[in-house]
Image (cartoon, rainbow, N blue to C red; front, side):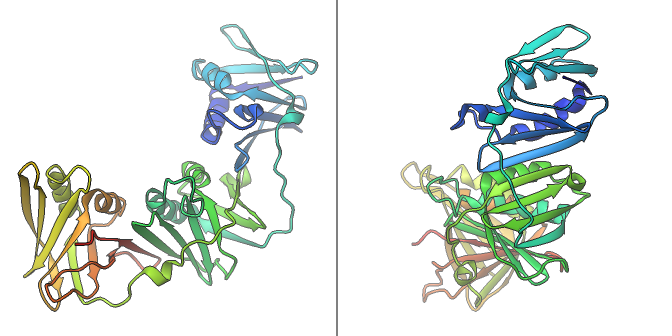
Length: 378
């Protein structure tokens, strides 16, 4: 049984899937790509059990067959072949495959396709939406870096999808920061919220084509994303845990508001971070008379730096607040807008604030970003 195909086309397809394969999977066969040809359609699948990606492409004059092929040796082989037509021959009795190219032949020891774990979904979905790939990609790219890296907290090591009438809200948090990204779309209806693992979201970001619409189908315990006009699907197991109640932790009453150019602030923080304590990375904001003064110092070493940036400030009195500059910088660099607004809650009698700060860009009507960052308590 054989398959004739362009080496570059095949390489492009399998690199799309390679990111889901773990270096040391729980089951050895999950190091493989599952190849299946039926009626001149080639399906290629990769999985880590939590996330399964399948992509399809039409081929010609191909026999029907299925085989599991080790991913690393196949990727390396195709990477080093120039663009040319190759023939893949599958040997039924031993599961080996032979790749014939203009340069020679390469034999790879494959595995029985029946040993590859399969994920099946039925038509009993809970809800289904068609959504702009460009919008969703922007939302996920904004939320992804703010999600926790703690594997022991699955709900935080994920992205929360909240479906409300005419609105999709994506939320991520690592306890120190939170990002809420609201997308308005008339196709969205009220539906059950889901928590999608971070790794699945990363694969989705990598595969989304900005120009396309994609379909989101929510099943009980799984969510499926259909991309590339249905040629690619990502099936992710959702997290069955409770996500923090994000709206209750976002302050809604603000006594002081500062608007500032984001790039000016980011550049200043990068310079000042050099002078902060290597552990706490503490900086102090002092705001008065439409000026933000930022102080960084390492008391033990005697290093100190201060900068002043113009801003627009509306507040009942001058105020000061302290942040971890690394945490704040990570958040600000992930907001793709020129002008941002800091919203501060009430300050104490000394003009100091120890409460969560809301940061939001001046975005359009179809998307709204609300970020929350915790200060350093003084």
